Image 1 (cartoon, rainbow, N blue to C red):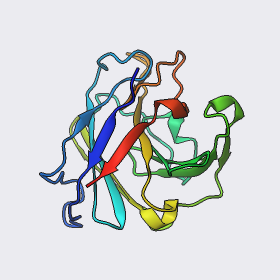
Image 2 (cartoon, helix red, strand yellow):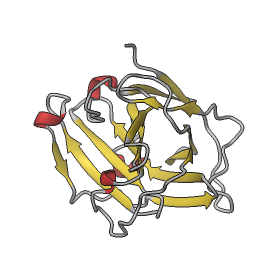
Image 3 (tube, helix red, strand yellow):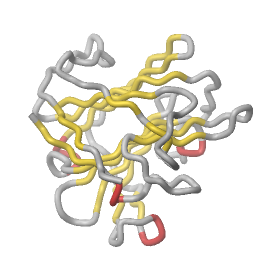
Image 4 (cartoon, one colour):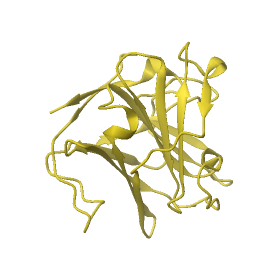
Length: 200
């Protein structure tokens, strides 16, 4: 399956409304990570840059929020969460950023010499200095924003993937991705599935 390309436009960030999607952006939909099908609940994301930061905005519907963790770097993937993986050009490392419906964050530097989970190593001591994160909930809709300083991740990322984990006892767990990894059971740590980023 060919990997997608995301054009990241130049736009200015507004602290008054950090969830606003600039008109220059073209939001993309997430699909089921395991098979590329339509997920039960929709999620879209948009990304833009102001030259120093990459801002990612997720817009999701959630009819059964599963979230209780409040401490930074807790295993947020065990609950509802959105995730961003950002990879610099060259090398074998990438950065993992997560944000829960309670605005709890997780960040790690992943060293993945073979591009697969079995041989990767997560460095949780790494911190994304200057990260801005915020969540807005209105009924079943949840908007998330992550504003990532390029300086914290070594410059503009060349490749990326964007994910959502939706937990639920009634409907079961679902895993969504911009570029589906096509793994069963679901596995987001598949570097070969990362899409390309092109900055305007």
